[in-house]
Image 1 (cartoon, rainbow, N blue to C red):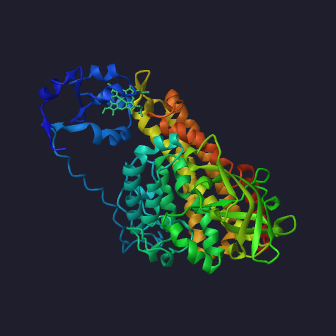
Image 2: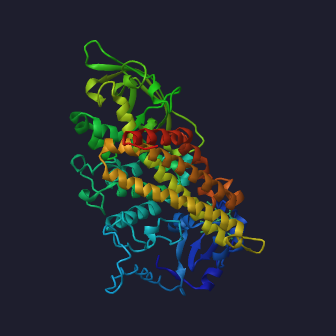
Image 3: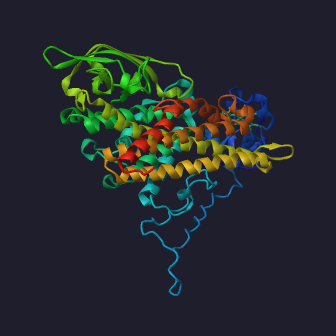
Length: 544
Ligand code: HEM
């Protein structure tokens, strides 16, 4: 984009079929675009040949320029200075040297990591505090490197197109493939990085240093695209369908199918919920009968609201192999190519590009080698998986809440009502403050839970943390719902129509229920948080 123009050159393209405009000292040829401009042709013609920066920023957000720059920008003004090299990030506060004469009153935990360089737009509370130069006990330089890697990818290759994909109810297959090639799928299993089963690595984090905070960060940064549909498309089926295979599948099965899944070539989902059984997992009815020769299970039944089902090759499926109740359940890995598996896409309120599916199994022959865990002990497999699933939901909800808040702060600084920007109205600042306090409370609890998960063995974590994770899931979905509502009030009509400046808010508002209901509804979660915690603490000798 080396061509330069004087203001007079641009002014000579001011009407008819030759219209140039200036935005932030760059020159755009909108001659052909004027007929398709969603805001109208005349409005562009009125600023033809002129500097339209002020008008542009009034009606659009930054994503529009990112998307159309390549197509419409033809150069820059000859007066434009080269982009200044970014000011060096404010140096993190130097670690205070203990004063020799001072009394030892302040204790500094040895585990605190050195603060990372500030990162992002530095809007208070729009990113976690450790993005803004604060110290953290959890995050080191590999986390900082990963956040930059994922943010760059999301900002350039995902965010500008998310609205289109959501409306089209599909994400291009190449993006899922990149999830494999970038090593991201392998990093989302809630385990150590499965280096043995994939040649792909995450560029900024050595496999042996991968931990649960990297996993958290990956999901968090993907969620900045502000679409539950996108996140569920990329990790919704995989993140809950693949861990049971990896943790409880037989070696031969894992060796055969895991590499293709981690590469992004094959897709997997979790099939538990049925038309008549959701949170009440113990009462599932999908039936698997052992064949007379004992070599296969024959599966018959229906599954509903299965994320990614339409695109999946493998279904990690809860089936009834025994008596009623939780001790008659097993988990089977069902392969689509076995035949007898039909999938139909469901129309839902939110998460449009996630492929919510109705699945039917009719006399599907499943080899006994595909049993995950032990027969009639599937309940434990399902329960272990729930913690990982719920934490994933929490991470997404906190970031979606932050996006609602961040978009609101930005909009409140540019939109004027009654003669002043929205941000100068105390009622708007009050809304932002209530959003921020809930976001920060939820995120800090989340960090603590991730740290606990990392410090405990899996069965111990399932037992000790199940109650807290259930409570945190409800906390996060209510925070998300609150922030989506308040942001919508701040954006007004712009968040009522789809696309445009309030587009992220409108979409997230529609996605709220997809988080509050699946993975355990808020009511079930809150009740479980108390029941399970009390039961476990009774075992530990709780005194009342
Ligand atoms: C490079 C130049 C431009 C591009 C690529 C562009 C693109 C778009 C797009 C994609 C929309 C749909 C809404 C959205 O997704 O945000 C839109 C809406 C709109 N544009 Fe532009 N635009 C440009 C310049 C301008 C200028 C210079 C003006 C004003 C003088 C303008 C006024 C509007 C208005 C009023 C709307 C409707 C906003 C609404 O629905 O609330 N646009 N534009």
